[in-house]
Length: 321
Image (spheres, rainbow, N blue to C red):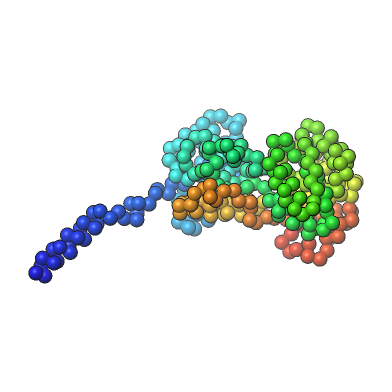
């Protein structure tokens, strides 16, 4: 009798082994491909993301996307992307994200460092690819900006923003947050080749300060200098998008820590590999933002930056030796 029971038990175990799939067999393949554009800022973010994923045991393929002027190089990068057969793609910047979406359908794409993210064409409500997108914006959030402006200049109730007509959603987001705080936002459409006209409009509209959006279609070195001079002459704050602009004379700046953006994107990759849908994750603003202030400019335009404003983590420029 015991022998029969043993045979029956052994048969059950064999049946269970045959018909019950293992966790490894059920698990989807985890093939991650990183499509990184050529800019140094993108590379910094991609490197930080890779290090974080390596620490969690992930493997990946890295494909460097050449400049758009290198048509053959871009074609080779797209071939490499297809051959990698990714189950998740990470793309740095607008061009790489667009290429990833266009080249491989139905694969989740995690993007980062897309400037003026709210107006990216692949995030439009009618874009069918939106459901497979998640990522970290290439902008400081309106909430973070207005919080910091209120801290540096508590009586600031009027901000001009120079923007491109194609950045309407970015402007709408700023206006929505500002309205809740009783702050007037004056949007002025600007162009790189006719920048002085936009600055003159700041004066005509009696804007009490100006917020710079990171947009290469508006700002070059002469235009940045023109705006900083406007702020100094009119004794009005210029809120900048980089430490270099603050060093040049803007009052205060907030800008991305590219390595932190990469680490934040790595967490999104892990969530998608764990089964979370990209559309439920959506677009995140950078969780960590770097800050800088020019104390000489503050003194020049009459803004008191004492107390808690000069925090240890805030980079300072213009201090006397």
